[in-house]
Amino acid sequence: MPPKLTRTIVLVGMMGAGKTAVGTALARTLGVPFLDSDEEIVKAAQMSVAEIFARDGEPFFRARESEVIARLLAGPPAVVSTGGGAFMSAANREMIARLGVSVWLQAGLELLWQRVRHKNTRPLLRTADPKRTLSELFETRAPVYALAQVAVEAEPGLSIEDMAQKVVAA
Ligand code: S3P
Image 1 (cartoon, rainbow, N blue to C red):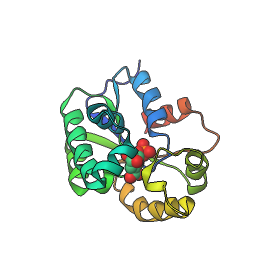
Image 2: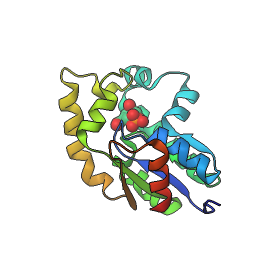
Image 3: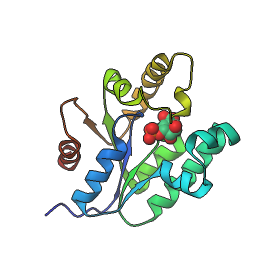
Image 4: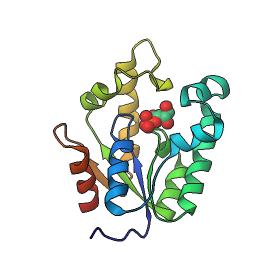
């Protein structure tokens, strides 16, 4: 029997860290719902993340993101995957620490790049040099992700199920 979850697990970390994939497997293992903050924002706005950034700007997206996280944390214990920028907000971090437990899915830059390079869904990577942009985000964000309550490292050979088990163990 998996342990009974008493607080919502909030997965944080860079784009490409596997938050959605691992979160889905983790929620299945724990027998709780899986929720994804990006998906909730998209559902409410009826627009893609890229469209929201283009039409309303990043601050608008960030405000919706904080609202969604607050709403999800107010619900029953679940596994919540957040967008890569969500944990950069001190207010979000405080809310997550108070009502849930933050888990940083830690992955190396090369692995992240291999996972995101062929996708065009992330507006922050629509730059002249997306690899460099990813690397800069990685450098500035890693010390903030390190404030998470738990860190779990994604090694290249590990399956999604293995990663979910690692989070349960941690
Ligand atoms: C972002 C990551 C994306 C999405 C948006 C901004 C970021 O989510 O929220 O494009 O700031 O790193 P994923 O981490 O799920 O790709």
